[in-house]
Length: 279
Ligand SMILES: [Zn+2]
Image 1 (tube, rainbow, N blue to C red):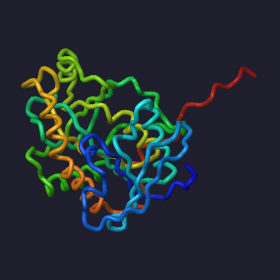
Image 2: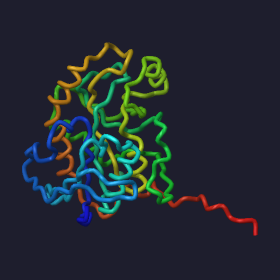
Image 3: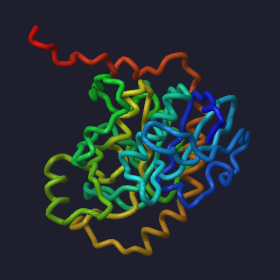
Image 4: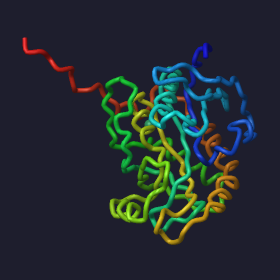
C-alpha cells in the first residue's frame, strides 16, 4: 500500500448493477485505457478497497466496486475510506449507481431513476472525514451530472422507463424493510429505497465534489404491487450489468472537465467552535 494516490478529476463508485462485471474493462467501451490497479491505500479509517485508475476521452477516473464494502468492514468505514481516497485524489465529479426497491407503485422493475432528493432513515449520520465542513443538502445530487446521466440512460435504454426525479429513502440494512416500514416511507414521500445514498451524499459534499446517481429498480418494496422473487432480482442484475456500465462510461465521456465543482458552494466552513474555557 505504498503507491501514491494518483490525481483524478472523476470517480465512479460501483454498486450492485455493475457488481457482476469486472468494471470498467469488461464493458469494452471504446477508448478506455486502464492506467493502474491499486490494491488499496492506508487511510485514517483503515485500508481502502482496491481502486482502478483509467482514462476515457481524456478523463482520468478512479473507480471501486460495490461502494468499497467488504466482509468485516462496516459500511460507514468503507465509505470513509473511499471518500478519503477521492479527497486525496482531488476528485471533482462522482458518479454512482445502485439497485433499489420501488415504493412508488407507478414504478416497475427495470425502470431507471435519477434521484433528486433523499430521506435518510439510516443511523449512520455522524460519518464524516473530520474536516468540520458544514454540508448544505439543499440540492444533494448535482443537477448538471443528473442531466448527463439522464441523457446516457436514454442513449443506452434497457427494458424499463427512465424517470428524471425521485426521493431515495435510505435505510441501514442489510435486511430489507418490513411492509409497515414501507407503508410509512411511502407516506413520508419516498419513491425508491436502498442503502447506499447515506453516508456517500454527505461525504461527497464534505469534499466539495459533485455527486449524482443512476438507480435501477430491481424489485418492489414489501407490500407494493406484488411480492418479488430472488431469481428475478438476480436476472435483472445480470441482464442489466453491461448496460449499467455503458451508461456510466457514456456519462463520463460526456462530462466536461471543470476547474471547480459546481456543488462546492454547498459546503461551508463550520460555524461551531470548540468550547471556550471560563477564563
Ligand atoms: Zn455540481
